[in-house]
Length: 370
Image (cartoon, rainbow, N blue to C red; front, side, top):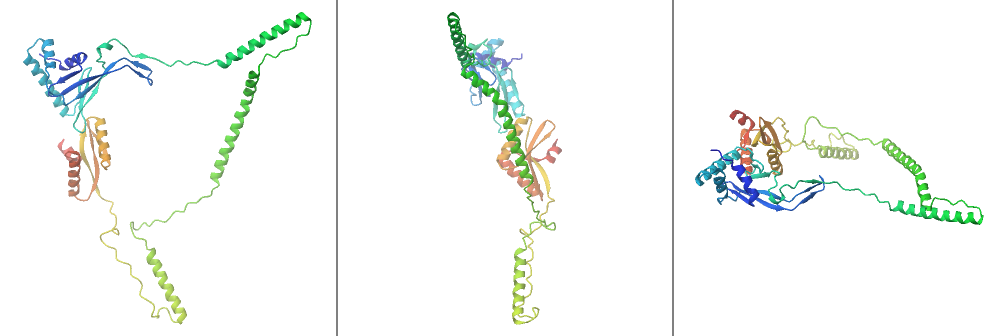
């Protein structure tokens, strides 16, 4: 008889704050209040935050008892079912697989061989059952304070003009023309008429600035002198000191010969030319040999790209230049190492193995094994 242990875990999480799977770990839930997501514009109901603790491995009997009652079996049969489930989960984790517990979450191992848990979006708070996520959008309100005050002034002005016209009509006096526009309206109309001229002036200033910048840049006349490169040899000490010393000695010899009237070749002050030092065979005067062989040393292989990325970050933080190659369904993460002898490759493999607790192999060795 097949029993769904994952379903039993999900059902118990609705009723209890924690569910322990003997030999594997425990799922714990922490209550959370209703939250507002201003980015997505949603109000989330109260829920429970689900986490996994691999240290809770002591059997409290709750999971086995639930399986016994729901499947009408003995306590021993329910315990054997839980044991088989835990063994299958551990074997899958050792194979770098992701174990999915429906509507609960997923278990996997990271590059440090630790069990990690990614919860699903199930709300295990029974008090919030039936409460949906409420979407909202902010209400924009326009303030019409200035318009209302302007309307009140216009209304009062209109009423005053009506009363004045009525009084003048009764008395037989002529009715004067009263302007309907107030001072604030006149100022606003003047500003609206001035706006196009301000925009035009800004455009002229901007165009003039751009023209001056590019014209100054084009007339700088700056030239860059390219220094000659010695193609015969790299990493050679400059010969400026030797040339300067030789020129100084020649000048002193010529000056001595001119004062004494002797031939510089027969002058006793003349000395044999300075012989340059022989280049050492070992040291900075050696020629650089760029024809080194390279090998790709694989430290770890991952089935999930995110795990490979995390381990590559660890290599980079340790001072290595990481490289990731996809071979089949696996992501090989390691370093490309230049070498002269095979012993250098073995030393680098031992160094990486000690630092990252692994058994590094070259890409060729892994291809031969597969």
